[in-house]
Image 1: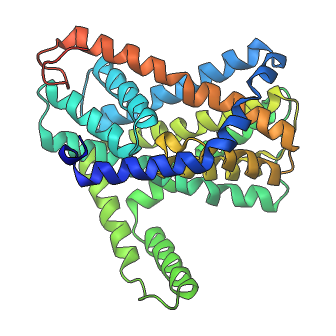
Image 2: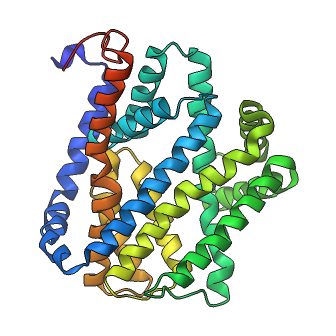
Length: 339
């Protein structure tokens, strides 16, 4: 069996097994506290579910633009399916991207458009995520805003960050100077921290080239992509704030944003499927650094992961069944086979 698998897949599965081996004790300890969720009102789970649904809708809107695809049904079913695949199969985004490609290709979409569209979606989404900590630094420096139990202040903070994301994104897409400055500073910092390695060069140029790639794919509709990309992350972030409010804590929303970004980046590392184990441990630890008690941080992380990570997985299975019913088994991504 192993001889028939590509070497890359064998390596990916091997890394995932090793990763799960190391995080398994923490996972068992973490999810053994599931009964504690009974102390959280059902209202908070409904609120988090609605926020996550809106976050997914923003992801669909972004993909619809980058892929130039009119069908919301195709976009939604493909994204939900690939999301589930990336959380169940080692390889993370690569596995999910392959599933998306196969589903779009089976409907007759041009291969070039699929690849460029999925690439643009990934670049835009990652760029917005990385920019979030930069926008939270002023709030941290000037005191930040505590998370109120009513979420009013948290939602206000989210709106402000949303507006700043749109402004920063627009400037970065229209002018070269901000990207040149960021690239130069990041390159200098990298070279100073790693003096024993060959110096990095041309980072600013590469940033501008990737920006031009995104602009070329979106054309004049780039301004429509920014709200979708920002909304995708910020609605998920507000769901985390709701989880914190549900357990009765009041941390600084700006610091929670940094913890959220760290957890999101951990989820992108394809050591375990969907960052399983690493995200839970990383998010709980960074929330503790944000001034939240260890017990409350763990419970809030557990509630948030239940809604944001586990609940969308069965939704992906349902989406794939609906996709097969709409487009038939002959053109499905399984090359005509049935389950």
